[in-house]
Image (cartoon, rainbow, N blue to C red):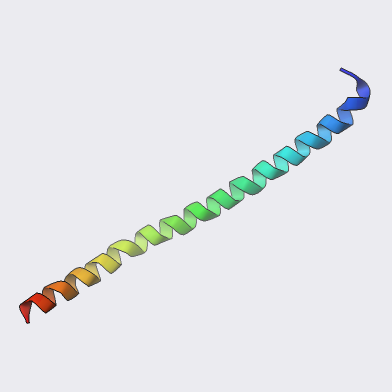
Length: 58
């Protein structure tokens, strides 16, 4: 390997690593947001089920 190409490869690898870190961070944030939606969903379902049952009794 030519010595002059090492700085270029090193810079390219650092750039790729930074992109991967940024993407991983974004994916973790999206996963946490998705997880919070799924914890809210059962509560909403229970409220709506209760409302439907109350309406049927009327």
